[in-house]
Image (cartoon, rainbow, N blue to C red; front, top):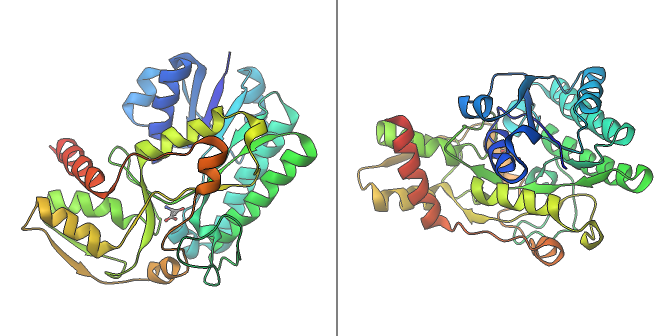
Amino acid sequence: MEKILVIGSSGQIGSELVLALRKIYGNNNVFATDIKQPPREIRESGPFQILDVLDYNNLLHFVVRFKITQIYNLAAVLSGNAEKIPLQAWNINMKALMNTLEVSRQSDAKKLFWPSSIAVFGPTTPRYNTPQLTVMEPNTVYGISKLAGERWGEYYCKRYGVDFRSVRYPGLISYKTEPGGGTTDYAVEIFFEAIKKGKYESFLSENTALPMMFMEDAINNTIKLMQADGDKLSLRSAYNMAGISFTPKELAEAIQKRMPEFKITYKPDFRQAIADSWPASIDDSTAQNDWGLKTQYHLDKLVDTMLEKVAEKLK
Ligand code: AKB
């Protein structure tokens, strides 16, 4: 019987991942933890505990006490926020990862998921259809920490037998819990502002294409990777995950098709330079071949779903 620990269960990914995992593995077998309180649904549907991943002893104690077999470690300072506090962000992101790698090594929680990001690529990487294996010279704190993390994950897998698995998430779009401090956050904010105010000022310029993915696709594929036969995984660093690529202008036009009165303006800030260093589109054929990565949401379906669900949420 799997016993699963989710670290960062109050965040954008964690709050949806916990509910999906509880449906598969049973409510009481999925332990949600975070340093802040989670949405009500998480607290009421199964175990939740305040736990700081940076506290190694407490983390190890928790994993041993509850006989955890799998860990999803989603704790991170995202790209935009990390640029404001570079050293702190590096320390938090790396310590959170190293603590879970060590706990996996020292316990029965051998299977470990940790998210990487398209931020591992940099300005010298081919920008379109970015291959799995290519030049990687990230120039953001977040990107450097993600690339280092991938290397450590593979190292712990090869050296110590930790069953490390990871994907390079594109920007994730969801309506349940909003992201915080990322460069791709505009693609979530735009829906909330469209419904609340009928207008949005984008912090990225109109033609900045980035890979994005609807949360349901991200969650389904994350669980699929964790359930895949380990022998089929040719990579123990992180798999490219493409989703759909679009610009702020294309997203705004798709919203305007459904809300003709919606207005967008552009005022790029410091996050523009981050976005300019990332790929516009990604090749994820290795993930498709190794473990069957598949996505269901194209731009129209994503926009329809977001407008409907955000409107319901704000009522
Ligand atoms: C961010 O914008 O920092 C994240 C990411 C792409 O990893 N959403």
